[in-house]
Image (cartoon, rainbow, N blue to C red; front, side, top):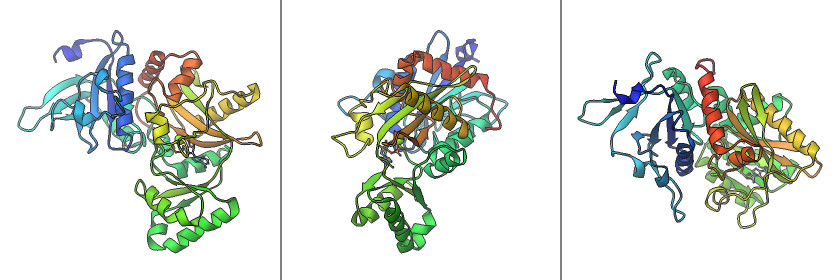
Length: 378
Ligand SMILES: Nc1ncnc2c1ncn2[C@@H]1O[C@H](COP(=O)(O)OP(=O)(O)O)[C@@H](O)[C@H]1O
Ligand SMILES: [Mg+2]
């Protein structure tokens, strides 16, 4: 084929945007990843997924992918055409990506050696895209199918962690049928849980992210509204007791010899927002403390737990593990994120920066880890 395939450099497809509520954040992150990829070492193919799921060819234009004047970028604005589609064939004998537009002869875009899925939430971070890449036989950055799915589902995530002896807070799951067929029984289940563990409760979609659909409920009066809000994101919801204490995060990154933990960070209590929500995380840009002011023992403990969480869920590449340090000195794991916030000001890159790994090195290490692995059994 043409010049696109003549180079000896590995070709990285940066896939971003997507159908989840975290579309815009993904675009911002992809802009940073595109800027950081060493072009001497890798060729790059940006592929944006629109909010309705079309794979679009987008300009390699990181400067158009930032938040400007609190306005969020989107793939629709970056797409080269309104109806062109990029196809990664589900044929493991070829790594050729094809581009087609209605009424035109499909165009070969050359081979892809590795995919960097810069996607958060459903249809990206949850194992679905990973499954497609498995079928296609193309290596990809980050966790495989199972770990991605576990990391996306706060219900199964807690069950996996608990089964590996990791400390998990009290929770209750309300499955779709329970709320739909007998809401009063489901409500009673939640009220009984509150009677045991106290109000307020956190009501969350089981599979969302970026604090979408999460409410802190102070009493019974606010419960139904919180459940409906969570159910707008996922018919399966999870109810948790309030975990008081400090919010501590720790990054895990896969090196040649295995996973290592970063210095931890602390997310200070947010005053302008009720909790560490979407606005606090992305629009105002997080003000986490790196490193977290912890004792040496606390640091070692949270790092140990973070690597255990990485292994418990069979993660690969990277994970950010989030904890509460309770007043009794014990850590409780809140969740893991298999593709954590990954802009240069996000906590995960900042924790690695503080640990001696720059953003560009991080991107490079993740691509290298992906290239070392073959597809299958993931
Ligand atoms: N059980 C809890 N107790 C206290 N605060 C919580 C609890 N669950 C969530 N939060 C707060 O809400 C934020 C978002 O919740 P989280 O479970 O991390 O959801 P997401 O996957 O959307 O990040 C947390 O960072 C924390 O500030
Ligand atoms: Mg979180």
